Image 1 (cartoon, rainbow, N blue to C red):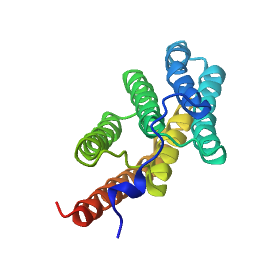
Image 2 (image 1 turned 180 degrees about the vertical axis):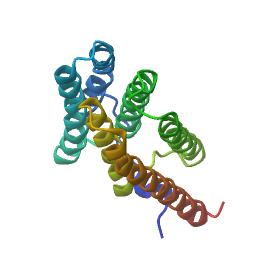
Image 3 (image 1 turned 45 degrees about the vertical axis):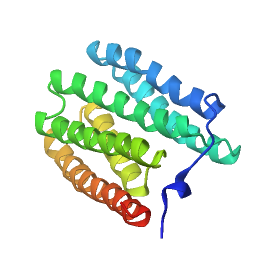
Length: 186
């Protein structure tokens, strides 16, 4: 049985992995500027840099044994902010359909609300799960392909796959939260 304490990490604020996550937030502005300038290479480079930083922060935290409660907040928050701002810009530029933008935003808001509730109720931040990471990868891939100019007909497969993974990730997150609620006797 999974208890809230199973997810507890260090209370430290500063770590190399947290700095990498913060760097990802800083990439938002040049990425959006490059998008609006229709600079495909720079936009793709920024998006790739953001993705690599997402892989790097978790790797560094685990490898150096510096997983922190703050890191479990800033890492997914940096992802959510980056993706939402970029997908909003892409939707405004007609590169992504509104329904896909709304689905991504609603998913992130639901998970964020659940995370805030879990932190307040149990004092821990639930880490991301593999299906959530797969959903974010598929969303990022579809955005990357849209920047490269892949047709909407070809992108539909990735939008649908992302949608399925989004549904599964919300379900997995809700199940994890329900298991903790059950274990804690709430």
